[in-house]
Image (tube, rainbow, N blue to C red; front, side, top):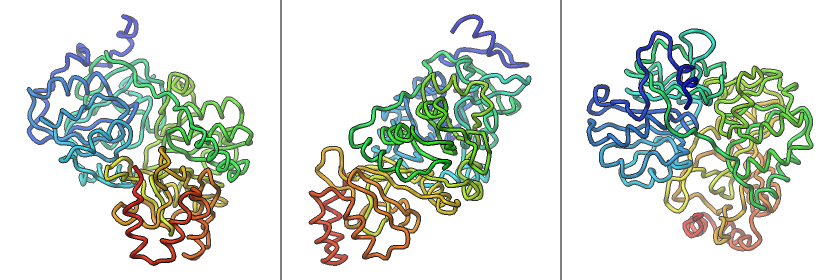
Length: 447
């Protein structure tokens, strides 16, 4: 970081700003405190690295963690920190495998209220931020989901000031009054390159794109399949984006004129998201751009807001789907690898949206081809999304529209999009009854 950059991050009215790698946590932490920080690109790597490195000199505390994109929290930290995870996404998967890690399943829409009400406790919060144009105001830059609620609820807030962050507004703007300590960013920038889609991802994405009409509003996540879906939408017109996160793929659609946000019905002309999960290309595009608005999960995942959008097409994925349409997005091979997350929020919102569709897109088999992701039953794994909340299941094998179907018709439709190698097994399980289906499901948990 240059001397000019260092000057640019000095907070109004603050004393000397120390490097994050020199910050002393000892005077702040109390025995049993809960420490948290924003998900993904919102992680202040200098501060979290310092916290991990000095943990043996600190009181025992609990970490409350969402999606992790970095390896800053090694499983070895369990010797000093207890861990609660909201999901098993990204690098958090290493922590959910620990025997003493606690899992807290919740809808994203519920997180702000859970924190603000005290139902979910936080004591010390670490954030990334940069000064905004108004004195005493800071921009969170890349994430807004429930950060405001974390900051409001915490006893102590420490901000890692980083001029590399984009200057974004909306719910990303934060008053400096709640920030007790400022540090200077001295770690790597958190960047998230777009994953390369597989051939299967592209085949699924082509089918999804056929379901999305021009002038629709779309929601998608992160990963190879969402990236492929965005690429498959390149020939569409006047799409809108309202999503929990966006990636570099959104910039492709915006710059190509595919996304204009002109027909959304809510927030016309604006791309609305809770987080920027991308590279410098996305961050530079959002920097000072009034057409990119970061909003809290209170807004991005609000049923009332989602229902008011026109033609909302929510595209989400899963670990497995059973023959009634129940969805498991959390557990694979006995390990917690996903989350409830925002899937149900967006699926229900899309179904309530005029002309909307709740689309579940997934490969028909696990990556090694040994197990079907269309299974007879979800016996032994969580039901993350109820069978009443989706209306379309898409695999590379085809499209199963479940809207209005009875259970028998659903079974036929879902077997039709399973991999051919597993259809006979699924047919047999469906015919032999629930006990046989349950036994078959035990053998079919994806790896």
